[in-house]
Image 1 (cartoon, rainbow, N blue to C red):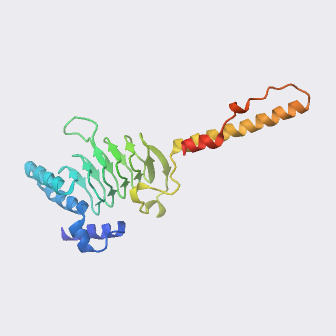
Image 2 (image 1 turned 90 degrees about the vertical axis):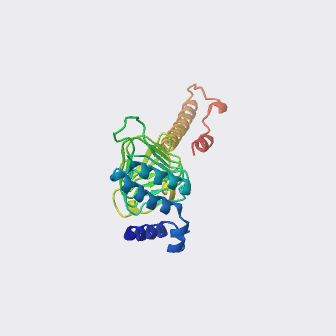
Image 3 (image 1 turned 135 degrees about the horizontal axis):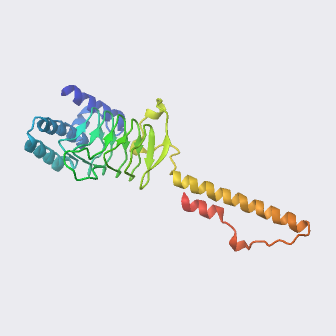
Length: 245
């Protein structure tokens, strides 16, 4: 138990620059308190002391603002940062070295008791603030879920999911760079794929407009009559790009 606690404290110090020392983490971090109390509740749950497990979970929620069902499986070195409003359901599995920020829900979408209803987070997953991960699917190793994303389908290992409903932004190879910590699931150059597609379409249409103008100018120079579009009909490329940024 104490070795797990030491690991938890060290992992928090490594991932949170605001953590100054072990004593501060031990006494002032509700995410650590919630994880420790969940281990007590989960132990009771496994030996069929279900009411006691639920009561410890309920007390931990009052104390920390973090609700973890005693049936959930929480791995080692899991860091719940800030944590207020986090909800982790009964059949959820959170792997080693995962980071979960405030307002996250690992929820179920079915009402069938006794079945796997909640998501599985594999090793090293980061779930940003306010994200909702809903359903009995897997978020792969070292994947990232951006803040306020709503994830309802599997996320591949090393990928980043953003938006509502969530879209995959990038899928990184399993290298050391893919495993680097990213606060709140924010990755460099992590553009929304829909915005990127719209920008490409806008730029493509603008290029076509320029080609049409050159063709009309060439035809007029050759004495061929050609209708020229009004200025008001022309695409405002800069304005449209600002709308999708």
